[in-house]
Image (tube, rainbow, N blue to C red; front, side):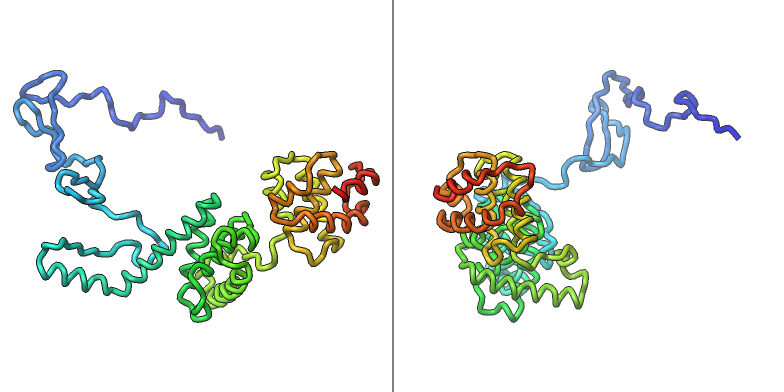
Length: 344
């Protein structure tokens, strides 16, 4: 059985005929003098007033500004902000305002509305969300980090185990979890530099928050979207930091890939076990620079990574003892260069 393919000529045209022009049948003026009256939904002839069409859809914006009416208003728009799913009422609340010379009943209504617990909770959350966004913008973190941090904060900030903890520490731990969710991990030291919360305090609050999140997820699997992606509760690996550090140092792709390779081999062989990921990242970056002959002093690496120059040199002496197992045979690493660079 053969199937006949319809051509463009055989297909009927179902779109509007743009050649048809609406003209007043009484005046017959061309081009027509038509007026769209959106308040009534009519199209009227501007010459004789004949209604040519009704029920016209208003395609203009659904809000207006009253700049002429509001003399000293901050925002002349009569609509609120966009709905925020992280707030309980998604900003669909009532705000009663009054002026000093307003009626007594207006002041009483405003006072009663300000005592609403729901509004107080939303106001506290909105203030915390604004501060989290400000902190994330300070380090140029992507928006996905901000959204994840806000979701974490709302989920845990009223829990009993966190009572007595400062709001800054809860925000810092929320940002730390949000970074891991977005796969842009940051160390506790970097979060400390961002929020001025001590690293030990961030670590303690992070463990409490992680336990709360997992307990809630066990009760309701749909309570928190981040748990579905398995939040990394272990320490940040050196491989997560190397590429960013190399970018700050202006290193090329060859050295960056070599440093990541050495870091993976260190993890597999247990070399530099017990040292912080930041120390391992700084050390393998220095070793990759030595291998490929880049003239990069340990002091410059120390400035970008926050690891002392002495720590880099000490760790470098340790990994050079197993340089054959840590490096790729295709690379060249003369022993004289290794011994000479340890004293830089």
